[in-house]
Image (cartoon, rainbow, N blue to C red; front, side):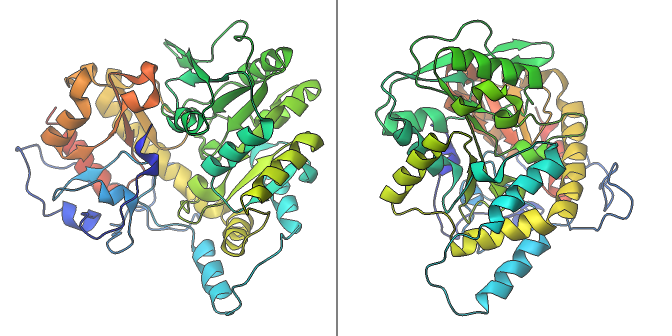
Length: 421
């Protein structure tokens, strides 16, 4: 189980505004020069969205900053960006809130077309709008209900290391599961080769990979879907980080990457939450090519009082997908520059070079930290809070996950603190 479900909404946490004046556990070198206001690689004419200015989350009930329970600690564990979200989303919420009708809403069918158009323009993927379910819940809830709709009698499969939510959901649903070790080579992690274990009801995959930020090659995803289909196994691809790929690493959308003959056994789950930094308003969408499974999924959702649509959810989804493109382009340039600064500093400690998102997967031993207690050691030596690799299954022991979606000044502070290792 990871800490991604950590909730504590009080104001005892420390924020970026407190980092500058925090006591330093040990002397370190002078901070590196501040990065430019618009990171290198940003297309000319891109607006400045404030990614290199301090961003104070005090008073917002931030779960991430609730983990920083000592003065000056910078939390880098939870997958949540310390960056301002898209102006278009803020403006849409403000505009909708001014109309004081907050009752039940129906699903806007245009939302399905909007999702399909987003996949076409951002990923070159031909998604049929009829496949789309617009959900008023986060991807974690959607996955739990989908598994109920599948009614698995056989075990659920997923790789390790892998997002700990898969194991947590299976335990909560009392479903048997089996973890498949990922091979780590010079180019990063590779999906398990060869025949998949039988029987298996579902194969769960984070794509791009969480925790390493690896973008699975298109051919590997297509092959995995084919091997799953041979067993009658449903491939469920959690693609919440799929819009956050770095330059040169296109994201393979599972439902369109799979051979058409196998699509009835493939589901893609995604959300605007990670992409546009708005996970606090739970929403998601599912791409379900098989009409029978789509109907069972919708029926199972209704059993929990969840129907397509949702007032705030639709407001956020539509604003993000219609108008959030320029903000996302600037974000990706910022993340790519931050990734380079950190990987240049940490070198061989990076287990698998990130190709997407804002997650860095590190070898604790290569950092000079005790593998069995690396999270505590990093916190004590550097004032940096990370996710413990053991939370990502047996394959994660001895590792740490760091989230580098930080404003420029905070990232400079992180780099200075890492010199203490």
